Length: 191
Image 1 (cartoon, rainbow, N blue to C red):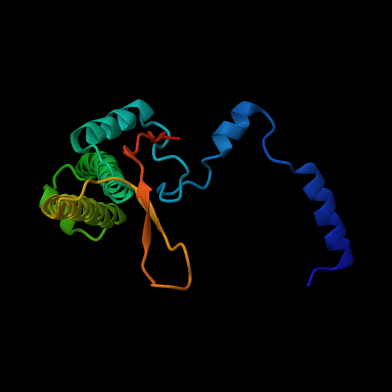
Image 2 (spheres, rainbow, N blue to C red):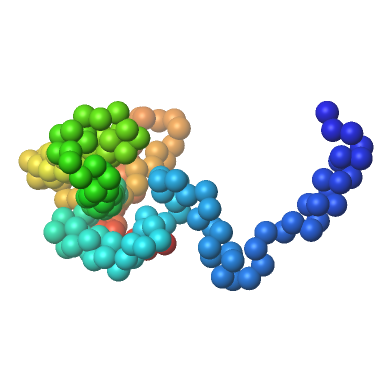
């Protein structure tokens, strides 16, 4: 436990230490703890082009035109998996170049079989790439399956609510109807 003198010294130091004050200092320090971007508020990391992400998202939206919330989620999952896979592929390329440059006499197989931190990072990166590919294909398979089920059932894909109008009586649900064209038109911002 801290002594009263230490507590007062800590309080005095805390008053003087307020972090960066300039806009430039704040923009630099906001990424101090960034390790991998998994918890980032923005899908794009520093050095990545937000317009490229938006172009990718727009291409998916144009291709799939998801009319329901579930389909929107699946398309968003595909976009995220595709973007993160591309990010990791750039990292994989850089890692391979660096590992081969550090060991000029070794082949790629020799480098990958070594027990160096770089080789372990490369193996982990390749596992993550494969995981993002699997996530993309799972979302795509589910999106196709859902579209086929809706088409086979003759269901027009709209978003609606079902509300039980009474807690007594026949116990039947009455539909509140659905929006005539409830296709999601919200665009995701990369920030």
